[in-house]
Image (cartoon, rainbow, N blue to C red; front, side, top):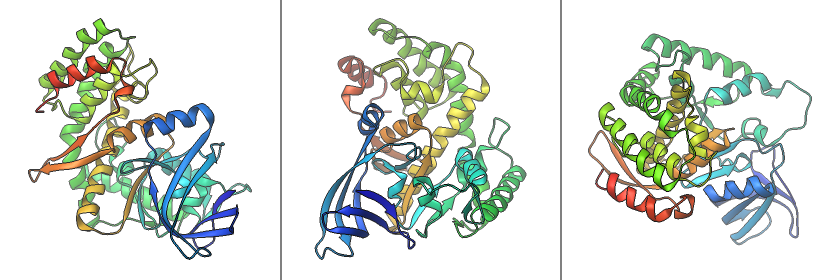
Length: 359
């Protein structure tokens, strides 16, 4: 079976027992953290579709697809509940894009065509077929290149820069508009500025503590240090950066996804901390957009595209969450992690009760 998209932007299945099918609509079950770990082992991706409406089968049906993860599957969509192969970008999606993806778009496309004479792949299927997609460039605009959230003037420059770039590369793809245009990004930057700086300071403070192979005893030594550092900086213990450090200490293995995202080392730099904080800011923006559009019932799907498997794994863990409450300024979400990701689940559970309960 071959999976693709037709000229109208619909997912197609070629070579099924019912012939070639065009999927007009479907629900899709996001893959989880373990699915990506399994994909890395056997180069296979499971995709589970429900309530599928096709052009040739009159009744809704369910199907599970088994996709070979070849070099064409090098980007992933982080969505509510986990992640998806980019082949299955749904119609009417607001797609968050960071600087790495924007750079790839710039080097890859000119006036809606590939610069190189190559066959279209799954990354192309997101951008070169009509899917009613909107590109959200917030991560690009807010990331900057001076190791801090940019000033208002820099934000305006970044917005103009990415708008011109995308018009040259993909003039038929629309950028999500949030009027008043520049003021939206400036306000978004101000919303994230304080927590972004605290996350950078936190990673710089705890990186040397995190850079080790942990035993049960060394976990007991290091865990208080990270929460004391968070308290001293004024970073809530329940913040995503603190939880990421907690996972770094407690997860099975050495080169874990939290380790790869934080990039802890004995020679940890401001650039390392800034990049990790920017990754977490993108996840923050993603979850906020998901909640907004869910509350407003806008019928838009929200996704963040990344080529970073470790970031996708971390995001899949955090995006498997549910809204709990808001005080008008802070959104509280409840997130649960599978116990088998921890080196010692009983010890991790005790630490959660000691340091994170009621935070």
